[in-house]
Image (cartoon, rainbow, N blue to C red; front, side, top):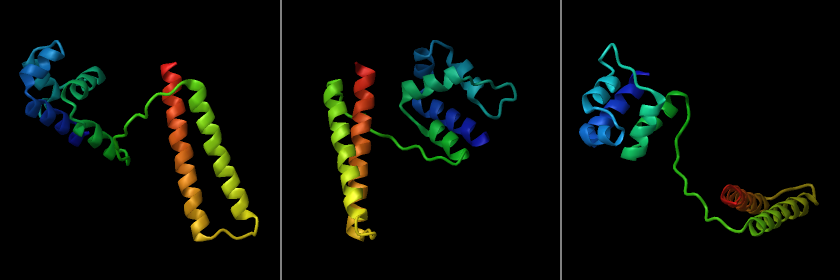
Length: 140
C-alpha cells in the first residue's frame, strides 16, 4: 500500500498539483494532503485515483497497484470498429481456420513444431478477431 500511495503522490507532484487539482475540482492543498502517505489523515478515494489517471495519463499508480497483486499492466490498442456482422463473419472464419489447422495437424497423432507455430498464429488471429467483435458490439 505504501508504494501505491507514494506513486500517487509522486504523480500528483510531478504533474503539477495546482493544475491537476483544478481539473479535479478540488484545492491543490487538499489533493496533496489526501495523497501524502506521510500524512496520517490521508484519504485518497477511488474517484481521486480515477481523476489522477484520467488527467495526467500517468499510469504509475495503476502499475504499482497491479504489481503489488502480482499482475503486469500492459497497454493495448483498441482495434478498429467494424460493422457487427462483418466482425462476426471474420471471427467465424478465424475460428474455422483454427479448427481446421488443429484437426489436420492431429490427424497423424503427431503435431510438429511447425504445426504448433501455425496453430499459435491462427489462435492469435482468432483472438484479435474476437477483440474486434467485442469493440464492434460495444459500438453497435
